[in-house]
Amino acid sequence: MTGRDCSIANALAVVGERWSLLVLREAMLGERRFDRFVRNTGASRDILAARLRTLVAAGVLRREQYSDHPPRHEYVLTESGRALQPVLMALMEWGERYATEGEAPTAWAHSCGEVFHPTTVCASCGAPAENDTLHLLRLGQVP
Amino acid sequence: MTGRDCSIANALAVVGERWSLLVLREAMLGERRFDRFVRNTGASRDILAARLRTLVAAGVLRREQYSDHPPRHEYVLTESGRALQPVLMALMEWGERYATEGEAPTAWAHSCGEVFHPTTVCASCGAPAENDTLHLLRLGQVP
Image 1 (cartoon, each protein chain N blue to C red):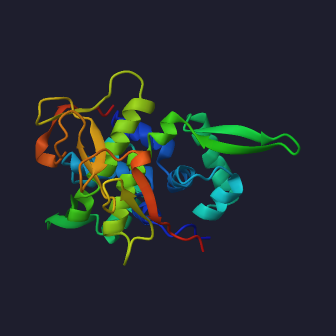
Image 2: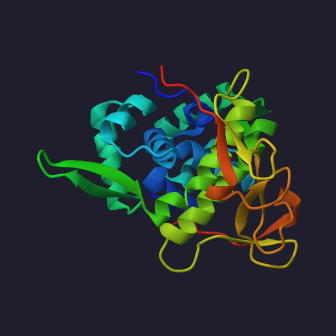
Image 3: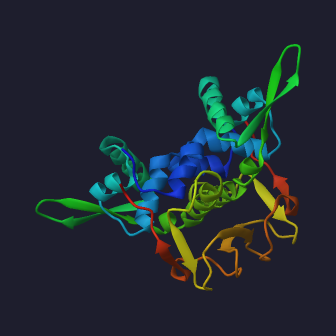
């Protein structure tokens, strides 16, 4: 069965699984190696290997050999992988507000000096993107 | 096994599964009923019922009875559910750029008159949140 024709669904076909997004979090923190991904995400090795194959096939991560003897590989974010940062920021913000008790485990500072909280604005005019500022131009169809 | 203590992981414990986010997309489009969610997401009825139970238990959707005879329920976004909109916007934007061929199936206009594309800025100063504008204040630990 297929649902509505939709860019969100297309995105989720690539990253719509928690371990995939947690691997990308680690990659954005600078990790590149399988064992570190396993340790830092808590995923099983089998699941993580499958998710990495999907992410490499989708062009989100690039697999690079860093040792010949023995042959070893690491995983590097591509441009498309780095472009997922707003997704992770939005999840972090929501998770901090609605799914985390007490102080947020991770915190970032913005270059303005304040603790960083992301907010979503219109790329054209810079004004906030709230519900009443958006209207539908066209909607993907359900087959 | 548990990975890094992290608000992203906490968020994904609730919405880290593609059908959950697709149900929330439909709820944001105004749908409220099980059969419409099934049709518009393409999820199987069993999986969708399980995801709805998780989302209700997590307080993202509220289950309301709208008919007594027969008893029927619909699902309404809570404040926490509506607060997931930036996550869906970020996924839509990434999916449109990196996972969709041709024209985006769905498009929104912003009140400024332009086709809407979301961008992420610092909530304090309004400047873009790019990698070189952020530095880590603290990082959730790996047990």
